Image (tube, rainbow, N blue to C red; front, side, top):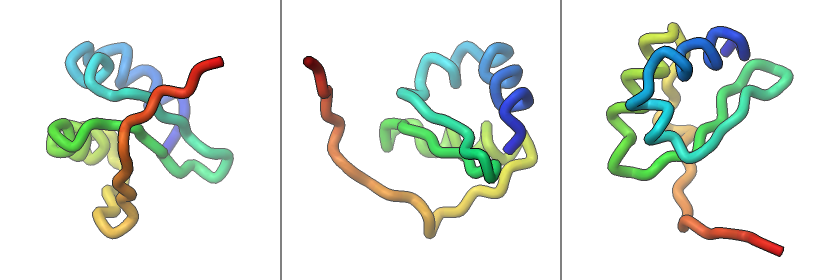
Amino acid sequence: MDRTRFHDALEADPQVRDRIGGGSVTDSGALILVIDRADLELTRDFVNGLGGQWDSAGLQYGDREFVGS
């Protein structure tokens, strides 16, 4: 995933921007997102619309946790 393309798409889509809890694009172009399970379909459609490859087998589920100092 191209960083600039991802950034610009988030800026243009307030619904997705407000629902994604966090994320990054790695140096190799892999997109890592933190989302709620309820937003899975919305996020999949967003990624596919950007031309990204959605990898259901690569999903990892966990608990939401706040880490503070």
